[in-house]
Amino acid sequence: MRRYRRNNPINKTIGISFLLLMLALSITGYSYSHWQETIYIQGTIKTGYWKLVIDSEKLLVPVGPGIGFNDTHPIYYHVTPDNQSLIAECQNVDYNWTIAIGLLIKNTGTIPLKLKNVEITFNITDTTNFTITTHYYGPFPPGTNFNFPYWDGIKFEEVPPAGDSPSPIPLDPNDHAITWTTINYNGTQPLNITITATPIDDPYP
Image (cartoon, rainbow, N blue to C red; front, side, top):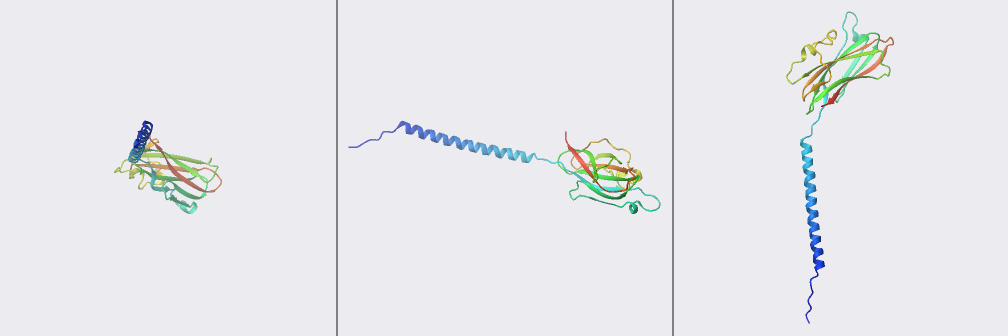
């Protein structure tokens, strides 16, 4: 006797449902991975950065007859390897001691920024006997001759030069700015100090 197996509609329904579920999961996984890749590419293309560096520096001292200032008040200074700060080690700082720090600052980033100020810090806690004044010049786009009267050949007695601008100074990529900071000590106790001058940026807007 031949027996016939009848198709079970329930099994067929379960099979179709399983196939549809697998197809839906495949489509969802592809769409999610495709969406992630698109977001990553767009984010990478639009990435920009700002970076403020010291492009050149000067430290000027009074010049007069007799013994030189550097002989009686030795100063050793350098710019940090990352070009972010100038550090000056100053010895025998006494009454009416004054120096002028000049910084040629550049935006080496890819987006505009603002030069907010030059931060002056000391390795001592009591700085009440120091007077600090900073003057700002610029911005100077690429190709601008800013050397005279703001930079090349300037003497201590000529600081600050005329023509300063209020801060913050807006700087497009590759623009320069110049700052001159005078530091005066009116205390009576001689000191050995370290001074750090750091340009501070401020992103737009």
